[in-house]
Amino acid sequence: MIIKPRIRGFICTTAHPAGCKANVDGQIEYVREQTPLPDGAFKNVLVLGCSGGYGLACRIVAAFGCGASTLGVSFEKQPTETKTATAGWYNNAAFEAAAAEVGLYANTLDGDAFADAMRERVIDTLKSDMGPVDLVVYSLASPVRQHPRTGVLHRSAIKPLGEALDIKSVHVDRGEVVQVNLDPATPEETADTVAVMGGEDWEYWMQALAEAGVLAPGCKTVAFTYIGTELTWPIYWDGTLGQAKLDLDRASGAINERLEPLGGEARVAVLKAIVSQASSAIPVVPLYVALLFKVMKEQGLHEEVIAHIHRLFATQLAADGALRLDDEGRIRMDNLELSEAVQAEVKRRWPLVSTANLDELGDLTGFREDFLKIFGFGFCGVDYDADVDPTLGREGSS
Ligand code: NAD
Image (cartoon, rainbow, N blue to C red):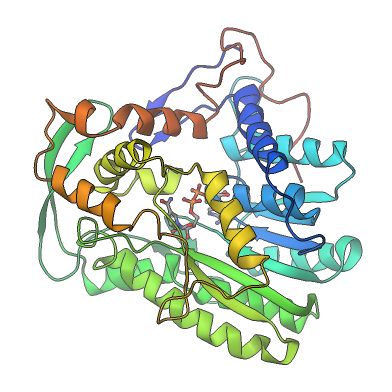
């Protein structure tokens, strides 16, 4: 079939196998071009949420930067003869193929990471194939979570707290700067968002892995958060998502206590804003990201996802030196985004930006390109008019 992007709201319902492969291969290439990370910094790495965005980049750096065996977990839609799979399914396939080429162990389990059954599958796989892990990356981003103990289906709501919010945003398809009105979350919506994106599931994972004896001495675990600035605080840090991320901080403390006997460590890392499936759905963020990218590119500070994660490993996770921590003990990787020069310029542009000058002040084109790339569209060297087999001639990845 000939595969073209089909965009519905915040997602693209098609994905291109060759484009996804080009995306994964390009990230691997980037890692190969960097100074090698300390030899054997990590040997066995588990990545929860491995198929896109930050999780995929972590898996690529762990494997191709540290030479680690990797076990990934993600939730994908399988392809059929007439329908493409999710981009993550193609990314996983491309990653596994590239790892196999250089003799690196890579296995991916497809299913619901919030379910206890998936924890059992992971533990069984670690016991039979890989051995104890020395790094667990928690990079799930999901709008829903079925609670494994109560069976309740929690749905997150991306909303402000307390009062309704009237704020600038952008309609990405139409390229129009608009005002959006967002009702405040109810206490139930806030609690649901914490249940989905908070730290409980990370704790469940680390508890299950510790109890099964599949964490190596000195094991590290990292989960990701975003803090941003006053431009995005009303919808992010001061909203329901911020409450969930505060709960991640709480969980990091609890996990640290659990890992103490192993000499292990849990950290939350504050990462920069990127275009991902998850972040595209947050109101206000696309406009902020469009301005931010333009300013960071102008100032020579822009980092692609893989560069950002490589820096996380090279300077923090796999480094011997002191970590760059804030008062809450979080690793701060958002130092370039939050630098004085960048933020002063983004804040200067924010009240000025309108539909008419969006291209001049912001990089919506870059935002759209990054969005399409998530689904494998827009890569040089990929023939998008070619007839391709969406199933890659095989069944699902696990
Ligand atoms: P993403 O949407 O690109 O990737 C999410 C991953 O989670 C995918 O692999 C998906 O398959 C997997 N997943 C979702 N639900 C699942 C389930 N039930 N079972 C198994 N796998 C499941 O997301 P991302 O933007 O890379 O976000 C990852 C983390 O980084 C999140 O905690 C997010 O808050 C954080 N973060 C994101 C940004 C940003 O700008 N995107 C910035 C800072 C921090």
